[in-house]
Amino acid sequence: MPRGELRKAKPGAKSCAASSGTSCAKSTALSACRQPRPATLDKHRSINALAETINGLYKAEIIEHEGPWRGKKDVELATLDWVHWYNDKRLYGPLGYISPATAERNFYNAELTAKIAAD
Image (cartoon, rainbow, N blue to C red; front, side):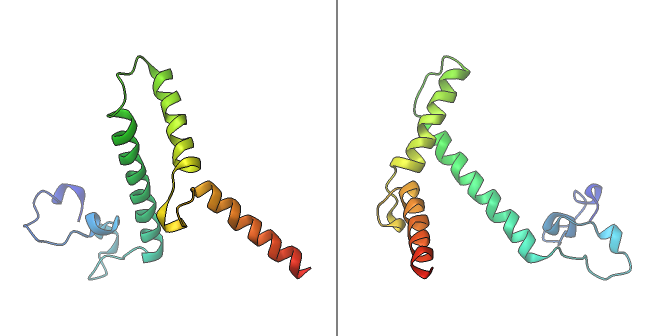
């Protein structure tokens, strides 16, 4: 549905433009809008969801909790500290209560050990 028609749509009416990011005007010969490939659309949705989650955590734990901020440098330093904690110090349950950085090191060490053993 073209952008201008979104306001005219009845409640509950399906909008191709809003649901799939495509325009019905391009597919007038077709009875329905072409849908983008689900894998591509799902990939972008999951990336956006992850980014929104991390941004929400960051804002709740640093920006709103600490402060007041005297300037941009204070926020930048607090951000660096938070990212370091999040990656290197935070104990993450699904990984066996180790930090994500430790889990990554363990993964690559095991992979390297397996490769050396195979040779």
